[in-house]
Image (tube, rainbow, N blue to C red; front, side, top):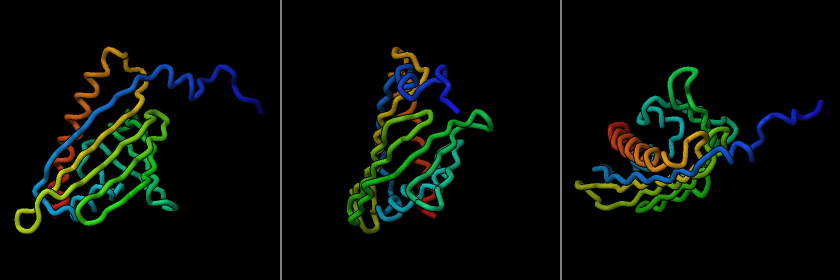
Length: 163
């Protein structure tokens, strides 16, 4: 059984991709512990990221697949979370995007900005991915739309983290 020489390779798919980089930065009136727990609950992301469900690998709770979209139009996004650190005032996590569609990484950071009755947490989401079939001239538009969508999603996180 040989390899089909006409099948696209990972390298050829990357050549048809363009880099999209975006940031989402929101402050939530919630204790950092609640926000952090919700943010790294990979299976729970579907509660606050629209049109998304997440399947977590039972053998490794930091490996997961996010399915974003509707039905057969859902995008498969395989990921692995690493470098997870939380000290009570700051949390960071690196997430590798493993394909088959998106390749790159996301960096998640939470920082306590106020404690006690006035608790507040700053959430920063930075993403740097290769997106297939998006023309280079449209990458700024895709980046802006993605940043707005993730800001919206992070604001929805407030409802689930407060519960």
